[in-house]
Amino acid sequence: MDTKTYTASIYAATFNKDDMPSDSANDLFSTVFKDGKPIDIPTWTNKGRTYELVVQSAGTGCYKGIIKKFCRDPLPHAGKPKAQERELEIEDDESTIERSHFLYYKSHHLLIWQENKAFGQVACLSSLLSDLLGHTVVFNPVLTTEATLQILLEQHKPKVIEFSVAAPSNPALYDSKDYSERMLKMMHDLGAMSGSFRVSANAQGMKGRFLDAQNTLTLANNLIKSGKATKVRLELEDISHPVDLLVDRLRDKIEVEMLGRYPVEVNVYEKLAKVKDHFAGELKAIFG
Image: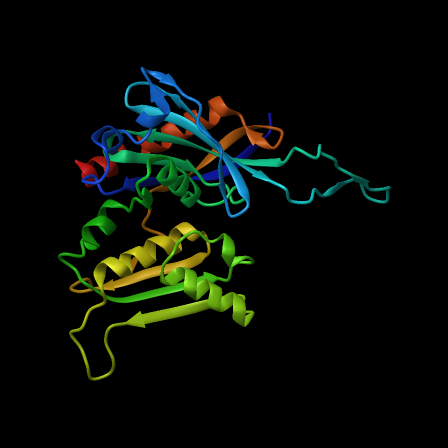
């Protein structure tokens, strides 16, 4: 059977527990189950794309899920060299489908996510759950133990954020509503292909100032989740070297059995579970 290599990343859900009902705060997917049985989840449309979420229980405290994106993109032609091409056709009421798989663990709100460039970023799942629950849910990348300790911004304030990013072909499809959205739109409007930025709180002869910690970390996380960043580094107070947020993340490569265009579901879930097991020591050190 053919195989394909994907990246699997570990994210942690963050939300305002005080505003969210206790059932949802303890278990983000409790709303899709009633009396222990799954209920029908309505499809969700965002920026002209329709999404479908399919979630199943995968044992105590764990769910397995697929989020599907239905697209009306034109299909490529089929053919072979030096032969007549032919069009691929679908029905008028059909769409092409891209999908990503995930495991969600109630403990520490951990998401093990199959990265799939053809599908998009984990922000799609964040937005869908936020609409479903009526409360904002964000999945942030889990950093290595060392990076986590260094980036405790209460102890080490940010002095500089440095990043490189590729301009999106369509900034309207970018989900985050912060500095990064405006920056990517500016690059698109200028016709830029990429950009490198260094934002510092200090200038020559003026030291001791710091960037706003929360806004800096939000920008860094959104750049990472956009999939457009090739470098995201922070220079922190009392840390001798920059913290590289792209390198210092909990993620691994998985080789998955394929059935045509899509991963074999049983196999992809097995591989995602092994990624969590692989980082068990790191996760215990980070979350306790």
